[in-house]
Length: 510
Image (cartoon, one colour):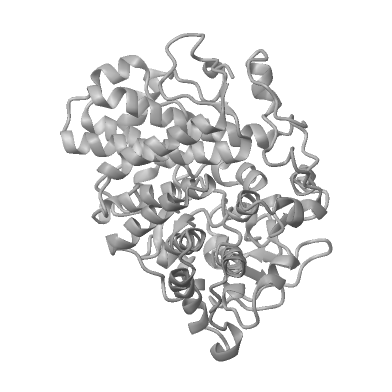
């Protein structure tokens, strides 16, 4: 992994960055989401050494904003993320038509070749984020600026670095751990470390971030990482590590903040008007500004949108829900409508969903849906749709699971039922369609929580890794081709092994 020759290069063109700063495309005073804008030509390339020697607080702020802007790029939210984080599960399949991006099927049937490009795309996207973070963490301490704001910038960078390493380590296992800007050829080609060391670094970053980040922001900074985001991500990390007392501790701290609640309407929670709602713990900020291609860069919604809309499609039709997912919803659960767009129906927003053309899907991801008239305004259909990364519902379900796993099963019913109660309120027949979970048997309640995580968080890139960390992958994914001892992780991208001159080693079985 020769960093200086890859898109995660630690050096950059001072001229390019200076022009970017002068362009002033990141305005902290703006109340819209475009504080996360960035120039595509500068992705992963914040700051040469000369720039940081003279950087001001304003320039440091723009560098932080660029770090956030990179989160919405192709490798972070489109094909690469879908392949690595969604398609392997029983909730989603490739979609589109048979001959379109057929390589995605390799992730669905677990035949992926290490040379398949989405692996390297996902890897590159995360290390770009990490490079942005490391540039900030290494150089901003030397910038002459307000001390409190500087501390916050560093905490935000630690959160984004932790988030990116979280995505990498659960996908690939043993990976390079790069915590500083490489300053020599040797440092630019780091070996892998064990997953345990990566998890430990993530936990340290999140501990540091939570100690500094604010509970909330004013209108001009909505969408930045908060204390609640750091605590919630730390809870999820601890859940993967089966540190149940820690999961309980971090989720209880989030609950005690008193700033989050469930948005009353599950379907509406995912619509434009309700981005960064009371339920939002962390979202990737996206936007649509007519004529501004730098801001209109997200393809998250585009790659998943309904391809049969006419006269201009609402998207490409990938990452579509399975019938297995549809069947997992209890009768009358309104979350089915909030999760799955079915051909021949009308969305609650009033769009008639067309019947599919020959070979096209009859289901789409409703959580990425943008009303068709809005989606088709941009060449990147639906580019303004935020990506929900952590919701308060997830925090409640982690809290329930931690309570159950630490022997407090009766107490676990409270957060579990809080999530179910929102769905029950919109049920067609609340008395019978979503009955209360009452069991306090630990094993039975564990199954109920697993079910609730599936239907509540469906199509949010959680199910695949959830089932693996629960130890159920062989049973759940085995019929799809998943093999124990191999598919707990994806293959290390062959391009990275080749670029490293063999320093990086392939995962077992690939």
